[in-house]
Length: 492
Image 1 (cartoon, helix red, strand yellow):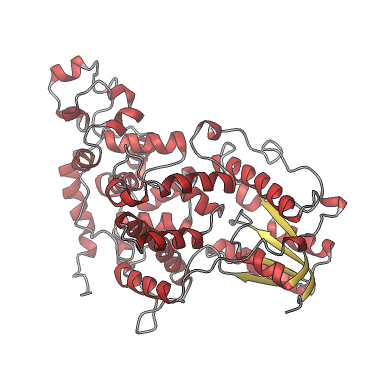
Image 2: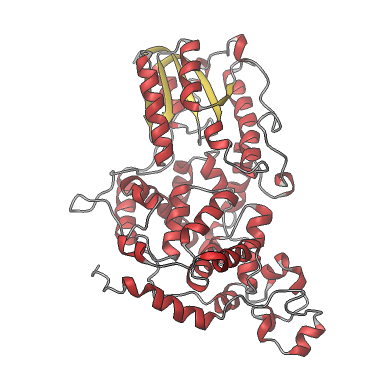
């Protein structure tokens, strides 16, 4: 089929790769020549703290993407056009300056991004330029999977059954986004300026270089290759933060330096030969799709509880609540597993998934604080922050979300610690002041005999805080707090 357009423009956003790239593949098929654009969107950047690992990560990925595009095109000038400004103004301006007939991008499901894309679409249309968007970040989106009644799924298990059944019928394709790389057009001279530095973007260096988080598609490939050596044991190691269990690919999935289709294809291949670990990991990738379709079909979750009744809960307020929240953020709750989790987040921008559940439950059901406070803090700190997954996770621990933890099930942070960090290895790594405590005492130092604390050189209140709350008393208050939603759960 001959190309539809003479010149097209691919707008890269959260898909910073060349291989298996939906929008790039479509543009190369439909256009004789193709330009590539990335915009450092000030509407996104300006509210961020000036030292933000994600900006540093993205900048490194943009550098690699630029090099990959030039290498595939075999033309040093056929790289990435990089601009900064407000995307609704920049994209139409660049498209018109280049003289393109069509702009290509991947679907985005967040309400703010959809509003941005609607503005861009309108401005492009006014200039006679088409905007084509396509699915790239998920396997199934929006209303692709519906119940027998024609409604979106709100319970994970039947969604997973439908997801796997459709996946077996329609395996994710590998998109040919490099075979026509000769169509990548050289940048006009006006767009050949060097990529911006971190300082030119208005940001300061972080500790990203010291963390074990490789950037770009090469970094994603290294992590994936390493994980594939461990994937068969994922089901038995993933819940233990001291073990090397997870894939550590979440930030790369967030910014699209790896294709979700490739990950699902690899998981399916391992499932086919009986890998229990791969089956569990495939289930986690399904959860990711599940939360994306919840966000797409129920956008009210961005501001409110998925279950409206849970908006009636009265959370702690005032100076006392703010003090509790500050202590939680700083990892000064007196519960080692919670504090170590928060230290991991604050120091690295990453938190192990089991710990996200423990720390989140503690904020909501031990401290009695609004889940949205924790959601906002994670949104600021997580390298892999994704609105759909973050919101889904927080509403899960708050019991206000779809298919969430029942309101009467409350994690005990001490028993969770003993179960998932039995030797205290993770706690010792992030709370070195507790390192000398024996395994039996490290999960709840306030229960240790005075001689044990003295031998370890620990004085509670000086070297490590006493607990902010008593868990049993907090649990009783939470059950009272949730009385407003004590209605029978519908049969499933």
